[in-house]
Image (cartoon, rainbow, N blue to C red; front, side, top):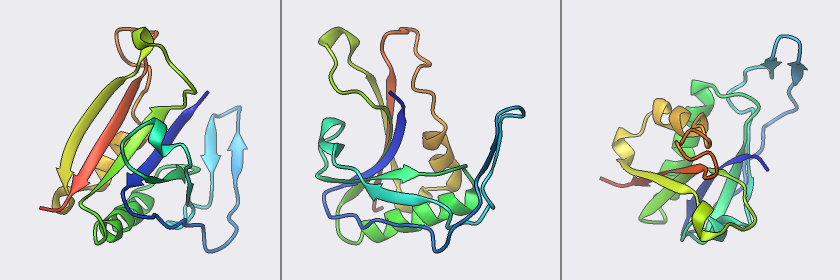
Length: 150
């Protein structure tokens, strides 16, 4: 099981891939990642299980070697483009689960942000959210930021 950050909407969401190959160096001794730092070094790939986590029909998951403000700005532009075709877009951070019982359903922490107020810090907050920070160690927290037009 692992964390998944995805974008969900009621309109088709196109995939995004980096414009070129970038280096990826992971140093386990120092716990650091070097990925070249280019703003377009991320992917948004089709997420078929979107309906397991929310009421939206389409989704793409974020494959991001490392968070940067430049990458977050591009994700904001992606969301803005999607809002041309739908009323709202949701950005989720979930712990991937196949099935859960009533007692261990995740806590859903949801907030709404107007597109004009959306910042890179909002994207960073969702991306870095801790799914296991609740007082109940058996129930993860899922985070949803719904983005709507003003």
